[in-house]
Amino acid sequence: MQGRVAGDPDRDGGDVPAGSNGTWRRLYLLRHGEVAYFGPDGRPTDAWQVNLTAHGRAQAEALAAALAGCGVELLVTSAVPRAIETAAILAAGIGLASLVDAGWNELRPGDLAALPPARLPAVIMDAYRNAAEPGACFFGGEDFGDFARRVGKALDRLLAAPDWSTAVVVTHDPVLRLVVAHCLDLGLAGMRFFEQEPRCINVIEFQRSADGAGSPLIRLLNGAPGDLARLAARGPALDRFHQRYKAALTA
Image 1 (cartoon, rainbow, N blue to C red):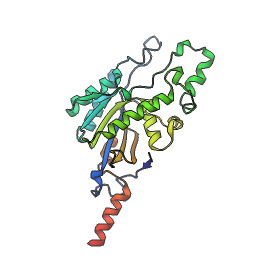
Image 2: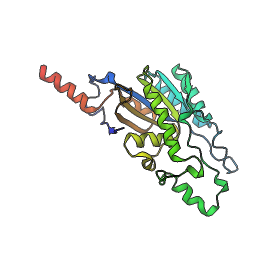
Image 3: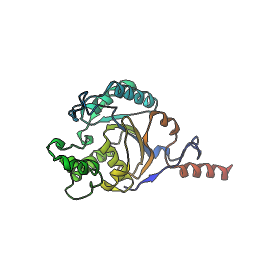
C-alpha cells in the first residue's frame, strides 16, 4: 500500500463536497477501552481475559456517542474479551450488531514470568524496535511475521467486502500500530513510532478500486471522540481544492 497523510479539512475547504467523495471508504480503527493489566496487589492479571474498568466502559460509551451520527454500516471486533465488551457498547449505541474476526486479535505475548529478571528490560523496552528482525517474537510469544500476515489477511477481507462505505474495527494497540505503519510503507519496523491510547480513534480512508482496496489516506491518528467533528469531508484536501477551482473556472 502507498500511504498519504491528509490536510486539515477545516483549513482547506472541508465544507465543499468533493466530486470523488463516494469513491472513498472510511475505516474507523479503535482501541478498546481502559483495562487493568495489574491487580490491586500490583501483580499482573491475565492480559488475555481482562475486562474493561468502569472508566473503560465510560470511554466506550463516549466512542459510541461520537460514532452515532457517522453512518457506520459495519462493526467488527477482535475475539478478545476487552474488544468484544467495547464493541457491545458501541453496538448498543449505534444500533448495529458486531461481527467477530479473530484476525484482529491482540499480538499474543509470551510468559514474561519465565524470563530471567536481567532480560526483562531489553525484552519489554525493545519489543517493537526489533519487530522486523527474522524470528522476532512479542515478549517471547507470537512471531511478528506471523502476526503481520494474520492482520494483513483480516484487513484484506474487510476491504474485499463490497457492501460498506463506513466501517468500525475494535482491536488492540499492536494491531493499530501495524496497520498505520503499513499504510505509511514502514512495515513492522514502523510499529515503534506510534502510540495508541485506550479508546483512541484512527481514521483511514481507502479509495475504491477494481479489487476493492486502493490507496490509503490517513485522516486521524490516536485521536479522541471529539476529533471526529472535523472530519466531515472525505478524500484528499487537494481533491476538494480541485473541485472548487473547476467550479470557479465555469462560474
